[in-house]
Length: 261
Image 1 (spheres, one colour):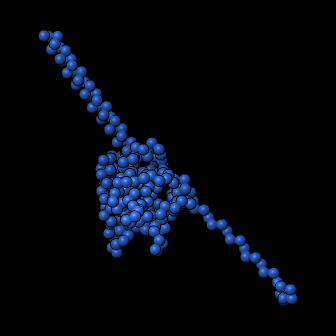
Image 2: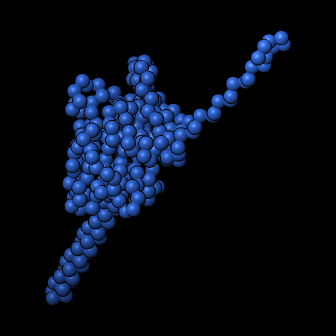
Image 3: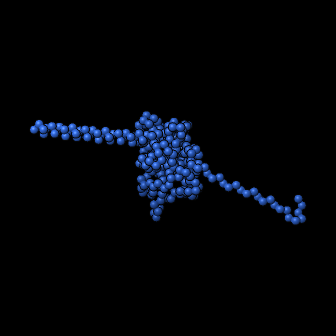
């Protein structure tokens, strides 16, 4: 009887020790994942993060924000909170801050966000957004062109979004640029970034810079949920634009016989 009780006690102790060790191992893994996320996003606990809000390009009100961009900001706020950081939401035309002091998420293409224009000129000179009247928008990266396709009854349609992480150097906090052709593409890129952060860290490192082109498939039916990685355009995006070839000088006219100088 005594041996039976001893075996029961030993079994309970072994189970308790095993459960405690498993809980501790899981806690350590979660802690390591959280620290890697904080390093990748540049948001140590207790720090501030800048969320730069674009304007609704189709609204006459300068302070209007598209509902899909609001949804993207809400998901970014959840990410910031998960890192135990504090979000600071600022309109794109009111930002008067430098780079590297705070992690930054800049939302929207250059037509709706002045801060995006500055970031493209600063680190991504090979990227251009085309907005010509009567022509579907396109993102040009080097010699590649990514053209928006409207959804119709015959075709599902798609839109593109540039997702970039820009290392500010000197141990500063990174800038995440999310520049889509339409608002729902911005929302889709935020979801892609959060869901694939471990994959991106594995490919580019915790402190690496990258520029990716994503395609949002049939956003009318699928919303921001179906996203494809089209290309890593880091090299072309960071290269300076090719200067146009110089024009050849006009030929000097040869006087015809009998003409006077």
